Image 1 (cartoon, rainbow, N blue to C red):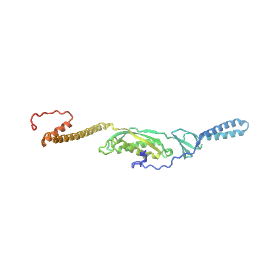
Image 2: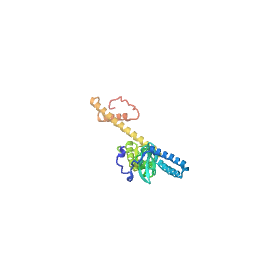
Image 3: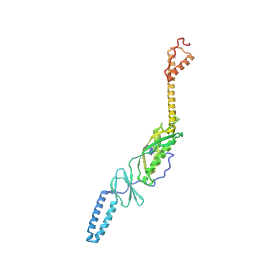
Image 4: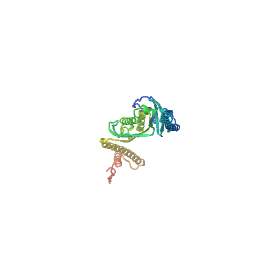
Length: 305
């Protein structure tokens, strides 16, 4: 994804370069090895059965049994979505990703690593945003192991590592941006969800890349003010909405008044001096901007009485 291709952000930790990279381990199909191992076991049983005729048969049966058991120990079953990290006396010898029955050096150890797509959802975290307001937020991260060697050898436990780094990144993003921006062009957690999510994905990738983990997607699943200030912030949001609505009403009313005066002058309906124009503007603004229906006052005299 694009977040992974971008350069790590400045605030992300400077992770050490990986000491090992994944490569394919040498392995062969296990069907033939299984067949030979079973034949060896049958041969060992036959030799033990014939050991009464000659003691050499017992020795041969023991040797064949040991060889057959050692050979069978090299068999591995690899399921789809899994991999086996192969080690020989502590040295990394490659990774088996091909599914099915495989045979490798029987003296190696094989560690199973899941390469399936996983979800990690953080608990609801309580932090202070950029304005110092306490907020609650949670996020879900979709990820998978991309490099099994790095996931096995570069970190102690890659599952816990992803969980810890996800929580750290979420907290860092939360304190860098406000819940609601006071400036119109400022980024906020609530008003710029796509941009903030992209920044979260970028930081997460920078944090877990050294563990051989690929971040597929990250999203905020919960975002709200903390309960102790939720009521006050709701009143502030409502006040802001009222002010914005009033501003739009006033702008529309001014345009209607300008249009009314222009048409009266253009059609020469009545000639108004500055005082009567001001009165007309005042009356029209009250009518257009008022919350309640106006109650007209009929003038039965002249225009000036």
